[in-house]
Length: 159
Image (cartoon, rainbow, N blue to C red):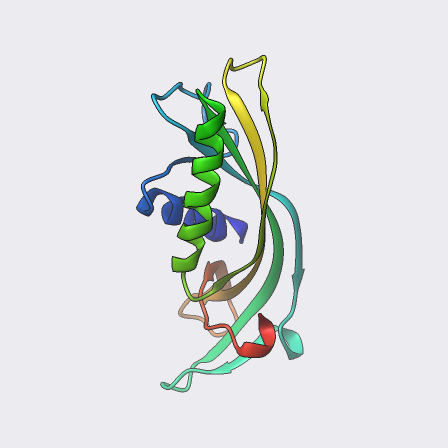
């Protein structure tokens, strides 16, 4: 379920020109010439948006089911210089303005920049509080679900 959200955030950052990886990538974090952002989940609460996860009908008459997720995403910035952490935070802030319709940024915060002894890089732990609307993917059989995908359009009251 959260895989689609993390993939969407990673793609959003990459589209903005920011080097991004999922948190805990296979193997060691490879050093780069510039900053890199590790995207992960710090906290998540999933609630049904309506009665029994029912969202309504599509134009074709198919039933749609889903969930609403309130997320705190960890966006840890690793960079060779401390000023790169601040520049990356600003770039992330701008990038969230182009988030997909099913993802709404509520707040973006940035922690203190410190030297990370393990990597030899500077690190700034940032956090994005978001709302995600997730639609369940269905098989051909009615009522049989396979996965969640990030979809939907935020209503004004959900922001």
